[in-house]
Image (tube, rainbow, N blue to C red; front, side, top):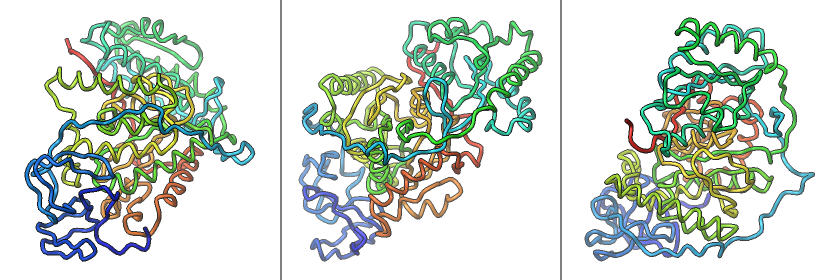
Length: 508
């Protein structure tokens, strides 16, 4: 790819479109394809390689991304005005392309400097957490964390106190899916290996009662897991005072933890793409996929998610499913989303946002093909529901919405101790307690937003690096981040507002 000089890219021999790697004014000659651009083609956008009749199934990456809604002449801009979303036949062929994983020999496996917890899991950070069980206690959690930070000076081994509020916890039926997801998310964070200790804070009269949460999720109070209600404590000021005392009791024990060499097999990496553009599927996502293949070869875990954003590309995953059961689980989640969207009067094609479309993505099918690339090429080992504990090594899938922080919350609750987030438009966010590496898909955005972006994958499109080279660079950055190197989002202070459990169902 480094020798290519063409301003356009043909991604697959069967494709009907070319991708512009730079803006092409109308009248631009593409001699190698015998084409003249009929329209201005923005960077990252598509132009027709040949005349396309109305109804023609248009292919990119060798896969269907939509149908021509009108006649499209060769050289014309292919986008929302002439390309429409529609159903198309796809064969799941469960397990047809599964193949043995080539693991790195144990004596050659990579390591990182992490915290080994009592349950055998690895922490990449060493925080104390203050978690709200309901939105009504969210502010108090922030008050407690703020007041407790003055205690950290005497305990340098603790990375900080993280307050996490959210917008749920009441006004929902106790037998609802949203209630179950919230409890799973809270329990996953309470047990997260990046937290040395956690304080749960409730109001006292909410639906999501503390004692019920702890009983349902098998959470047991102890020196490093404490719980309290504001109403029982006697109000805000007394709760803050008591909460600070509890955190103060946790700090000496939390500070005893120290980093040690741990195998990369203990890493669980959540994969997210947000503010995507057409470069996402060309640069950052496939490079991240290479990094995940390397992690899986080490015995680690890659967590792919965002079910609406694999829609139309799920067959690329089911074909690599390690069993019929795993493939059918993924197919069942796709069916649930089809029914859910129809019931809510929505379309699964509504995921390409205005920003995505401005970046060159037209349909969810096109976006999904690029998004799936984040997971790499190894077998699909397991499928999890939202916020379930991820236990299987290798590439796994978690059912989440495409909404970035809701998706990341589910993966972190599942045990992701680090997140890799690709973005083309420039999403600014971060998660705690799991650090987030931000991967830019194009150099122009990286140049504008370098203070937010950790790695520039745009060099792939410029021919300055290969996908494989960037995949190795990402893998090395993952090890460095897991060992304590701060990410850009951590330096900016992101993470306290990004705990967003999935709210499903009626708010009463």
